Every structure is written in structure tokens, then in C-alpha cells.
Image (cartoon, rainbow, N blue to C red; front, side):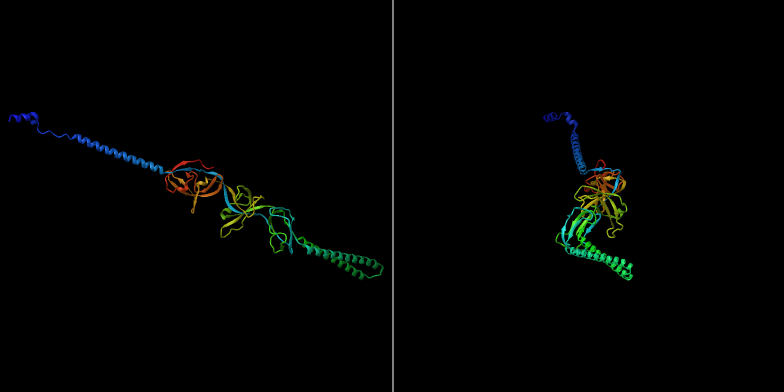
Length: 392
């Protein structure tokens, strides 16, 4: 018994028996749990922050950068652009005037300048030459008869004073003399007619000008029904026959300057409007404007050309061609709103010049207009605008 009690004292002592059961230590576990929770929250926050940053960067990359221009308003010439066909201002068809016949010679080529009355071609005249000789002989006969009748009359007048012949004989001889003189006139007129017909066998230029076409060769048999053998431009003057809408016709007048550029060249020729169409085509609602041009070998009748007609000046925004787009609805531009979104704006354009396109309506000049890449944008798109220098 004493041994057991001693053992109990040695293990726990008296204090252990008196204090009773001791409480468990829980605070280390609580601290560990808090550390774990804080670590999880921190990891979630870091991951979420990275994801949001990546999304923002991705969104930033998706917003395109566009170049914009604020055009303002400038004084620009109001230009009307049109196209048309080059032609001789006064075209002269030259053909056979008389009976015709076989062409014996042609003296000119297309592109050659000729003087008024110059022979372009000749037609065989062998038959008329013989007729001319015959009629010339008839004139000589009639002239001889007229001289004889005059001599007879003069002798009779001397004899009537002496009483050898009567006054009636003198009157008869006077009538004979007058008839012979008339026959002379008839014979000469017939000879002149024959010579005139012979002269018409020479095909001559009606006025000085430029030969445009040649439709005959030696050996051809031609007549008055053969049509034009040559076509000429009087004085070499040319013109552009252009078609304009009736609204544009109302804005121009005779005497306005125009610049004409033939297709295939960059050379510009200055002309002036010399005639406006007095009527409007009911189907096309267009009229013809005729622009006079001086001669130049590059202006070939039948060719196609572009014309710009100045119809005054106006104050308007001026944009580069790349900023103006078009679709079936008409011309338009894209503008950037204050919130950097894109909006479509319909515009009415004027003439195209070296400095750009004049916008007659639709813009005030203070808008931010997308300079290029408008074809890749849609209304409402978000963009990053970068300002450029205004055109002009």
C-alpha cells in the first residue's frame, strides 16, 4: 500500500492530484486556420487582378487607332465635272457637186492643212473637155455672124441716106444684127456652163482647215450620191460635247472657262463654253454643253475627255479623297464623337481638285472626320483618334 501511494506521488505529485484535469491548448489551430484563409483570399485577389488587367489590355488592343482631320472651311472653286466626246467645232463634209465620174487623183491626206479652194481630188473630165471645145467653136461662129450682121447694118445706114434702100430694110438688118448678138451671148453662156461643170470635177476645200478623213482613192467612180469624200474641221477648231444635268446647266453660262483632259494623257487644255443646249432631254434630264478648244494634235475628234468647269467659288470644308466614301445611298464620311465612337454623316460633294474634295453640305468643318480606313469601320465603333493636319 505504501508503495502504490509513493508511485502516485512520484508521477504526479501532490499537486497533480489536487489540480484535477488540465484544459487543451486550441489557439495554435485557430491561428493556423486564419493564416490559411488569408492566403486563400490573397491568392484569389491576385488571380482576379491579373485577369482583370489582362482583360483591360485585351480591350485596349481591340480599340483601333484612326487618323482624323478637322477640315475647317476654305474658299474653294465650285467645279462641275463632266465627260464628253471631242469633235470638230465646225465639221465640213466635202463631196461631189456635179455629175461625178472616175477619180483620177487625190492630193491630200488626213491630218493635212489645206487652204480655201485648194483642190483635194480630181475626177475624169475627158467628155466635158470635148464639149467645151465644141461650145467654144459655137461661140466663135456666133461672134462671126454677129460681126457680119453689124457690118451689113452699117452699110445699109449709109445707103438709106442716099435713097438706095428703104428704112424698112434698115430695120430688118438691125433686127438681124441684134439676133446674132444674142446668139453670141447664148453660146458664151453655154460655154460658161460647161466650163463650170468641168470645174466642179475638181473637189475643192470650201474653207481653210484640217482634213480629218479621206474616203476616196484614184479609180473610184463617184457621184453626188456617194456621200462625203472628205471631212474637214474649219480652221482646225475643236470642241468637247459634254452632257450635264439640268441643275448643273443652270449654274453655268456662256463664256465660262473649262479645263479639258483627254483620256490617256495628263495634259490639260483650256477652253471656254460657247454654247449651251436650248433643250433638255426628257429621258435623261440632261443637256449638251459645247466647250470650244484651240487646235492641238492631241485633241482628236471622236476621242473621250474629262472636263472641269469653274462655276464660281464658295466657303466649304475640303477633305482628301480618302475620307469620302460612297455606297448606293450616296456619299458619306465617318466622324468621331466626343465619346470616341464613330458615326456616319451623309454629305454632298462638289468638284474634285488637286487639294481635295469640297463638301457642299453635311459638314460644318468643326467635326473630327476619319481620314482613312473608313471602309473598315461601322457606326458605333470605339476608336482612338489621332489628329492630322487639315487638307489644303
